[in-house]
Image (cartoon, one colour):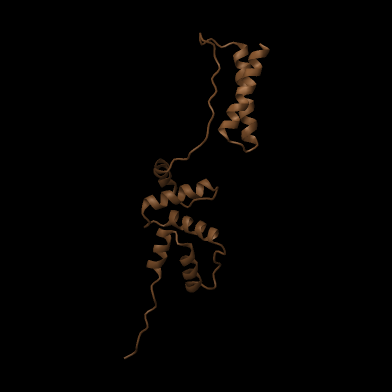
Length: 155
């Protein structure tokens, strides 16, 4: 009778690494199972691979897939989550965006050319800050107040 050697099944450990986002162990297994295949060189690359794999894995718990989709999207990396699951994932982990509200009006709520001029000037301030990558609300608010006060004095 011939003795059969059973090859170890690494799928359970791969799955555990995906669930736990274990970058160190997944690289070790990757190098062991597929030594001739390119492997992530840094923990950051391994984490990206894990999140991409989680979005693509049909048998992965959906909340993990949705979280990985949001994680990748935040970093501008393409998610492999199927299109049909995107609305559900986006409801679970909505994209957070910053915004600035500007309202300029008289007590009677009647808008004049002056009010439109002030609104435009305040919008320009915000757009300039955002164009420079500055989203510090305190700085933006202070600059808007300064311009608004200056325009009020010129009136």
